[in-house]
Amino acid sequence: MSERLSVLLVDDEPIVGKRLGPALTKIGCDVEAFEDPKKALDRIDQKTFDVVVTDIRMAEIDGMQVLDHVRMKSPRTRVILITGYAMMELAREAMDKGAFDFISKPFKANDLRQVVARAAQSLGVSVDFESTAIPSQ
Amino acid sequence: MSIVIVSSDSTEKGEEIARKTAQILEYAFLGRGELLPVVTHQHGIPKERLDWALDKSPRLWERSAGFQDRCLAYIQCATLGELLKDNTVCCGLAAHLYVIGVSHALRVRVLADPVEIAREISKGGAGSLEEATRVMERRRKYRRDWSLNHYRLDETDPSQYDLVISLSQIDTDEAIRIITQTAKYRRFAPMTYSLRCIEDAELASRVRAGLLETYPTVKVRAEGGTVIVETKGTRRNRLKMAAAIKERVQNMEGVDYIEVHVKNGLFKKFS
Image 1: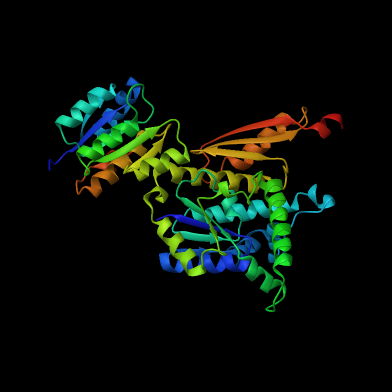
Image 2: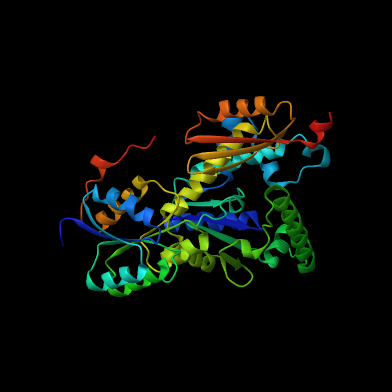
């Protein structure tokens, strides 16, 4: 296992990758961001990531399909789902299918960092969350 | 790690099942005996009045005073405060009506056995099954009206629950076993989203409880520290009222931003 946490980030809104990518890099993650979920799945087939962060509602392939794909390929990988259309049924379905966590938008970069830090901890990898975290107001 | 909420048409049976479930899961138990003394201490309302608020519909002349609404708001606020701690089995506090949308709350409805109700009615003797069925039907209608009146939800509607168990078909021990097993399903595990849902509900209920005495028509929503308050008032007093509400709410714990909407109240408009 590498020292740095490998994270794949997929969201078809470019702004999300631009914002969250650097936020995760700051806590020592190696981040690969994708806007096209198809390309993200191709990359998942090539490399086993520690953490996959995916939006749920995307045009061709949705986040649940990404979750299924990752779980088939690498059950060890922690999948974090993010969505602006959170509902109880969807959240429960995601957890049933093996998601590590489910976050509703809007959220602060710190919130995601906290969840990624927990995912890293569950994998036995440490990330430097404390030194970079912005204290909550 | 989750919350289990047990609701039943038999208070005794519901509490018995909830207590045993808590024991097996090693969760805290939260019932009237645990929570109402806290509400009494905080707001100076006798326990009997809180029990009354949870069980009875107000008479016509009691409705406008809003006392029952206040009692229920205080109970809701205190209950949600306890449920934030997680790993809790809750019963008898109408919590199934205010954790809607919280995915880590398993909501269970336990339907009492009419034969036992018949026994209850005749105080241990042999009560008639027909009479028991009639009593249960009356209770069901009463609870339906009560829950619709206060929460706009029908607590007797099975679709409000994740699990409905009929004690005329499944015995108490089996019911407890089913509940404890279901609570362990991954779908009822807390997640960032569901924890935020319950934090929002708790914050909204706390703000509402703080305002209700002065503003009886107040409605509150909360989303991640943003609080939206809606109330009714006169056009003339709108700004003053909004400022007073903001002043009172802005320093409450967990409030980052407050928005107040004062709508024209029908009666005050003509006064």
